[in-house]
Image 1 (tube, rainbow, N blue to C red):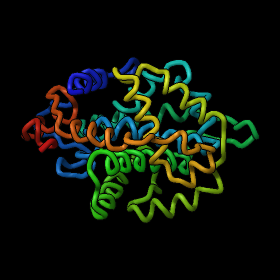
Image 2 (cartoon, one colour):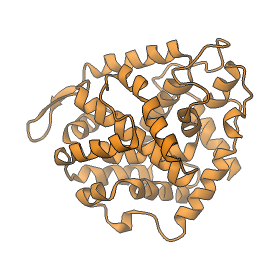
Image 3 (cartoon, helix red, strand yellow):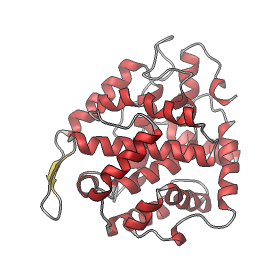
Length: 292
């Protein structure tokens, strides 16, 4: 398993096609948007949280018809899902671990790129990628996915840690244009209640799950499919009902225990070349600072 984690992380270290390489190790002492002792730094270093949480976030994003149309018609996901997922993961690491000026520059580029994304849903509803309501949904569901995956399959987050990690992300989310993201777990629940009536079932969700099942994301295909089932499992029950994701789409007997074991191994796995370790060393901390 450690060998497979090593292969996985080395794939994610290299910037995917179309993204400029970022030096997470320099300049020495340069602060990030998030502090090294933040809950965010500890959560987002873990590949189980990133993969399971990222897939759960996309499931929820695709429930919103304007976001769904924008993703499906204006991104490369259908034809190259692996690169698209690597781009998203790498962008998250830049946002969190890169020097703050580097992170702000990358985010500004994303915002400029989104300016060109607009259109109509199949039912004629207009959308713009930089619409604040849609940005809030994308940023909020990403946070929910990452934090829930970490808490369920890596290490349970106490209530105050969960509130802290939501609050920590608000400043970075605002740089993307999402100025209304929830800042606590209770606020996230209230936000879900607010958004429910705007969400709908779509066959595209099932198409997305089929794509990620067959894409060469992980070295072990069985683990990959288990992680996809885990992503469905952490999606709120009301959302699974809305989307038609039955119990057969979730984890099977014993898989939660197995995934928690993988999450625990990941939590102690240090790769010096990975952005979290490089960021620690940039700030004069040991490479294993986040892994102790």
